[in-house]
Image 1 (cartoon, rainbow, N blue to C red):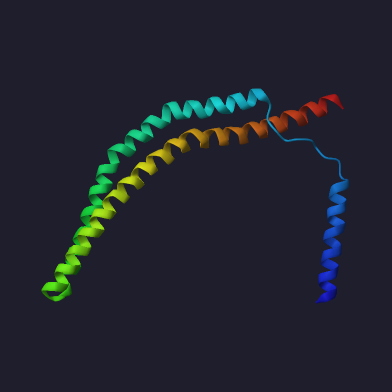
Image 2 (cartoon, rainbow, N blue to C red):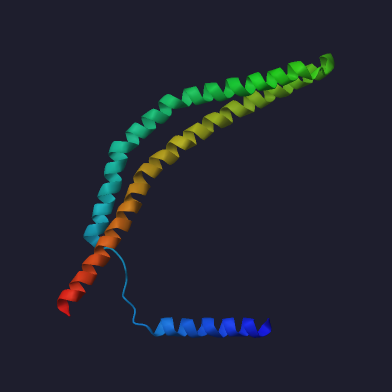
Length: 151
């Protein structure tokens, strides 16, 4: 076991040394023009897709709020009705239900608002991120083609 561990560490060190001695290809980055194209793609997506996604989220959010509230309330009230906890136990459960309802609904509303904000940020950042990846690939192919022409 110790010899296998030693052999593995020595092999890893030799591999690392060989990789360091290889010539480096340079930075695989995009040019300023390509960066401007990625920023344009992000801004266009935010201007076109952003309002549509935000509008759909705002149209859908009252339905989500109402559906979640009605579903949770019917399940909770059904459980309270079937619990047979006696008059004081039922009263305590109803008070706890009212407390949970008064805390849960604002939390759900805040979550919906944060969801809309995250969707807007995603509409701006994700297309720019994808565009940068595509442009980096195109730039690497361009550099390889340029090297072939100059050699």
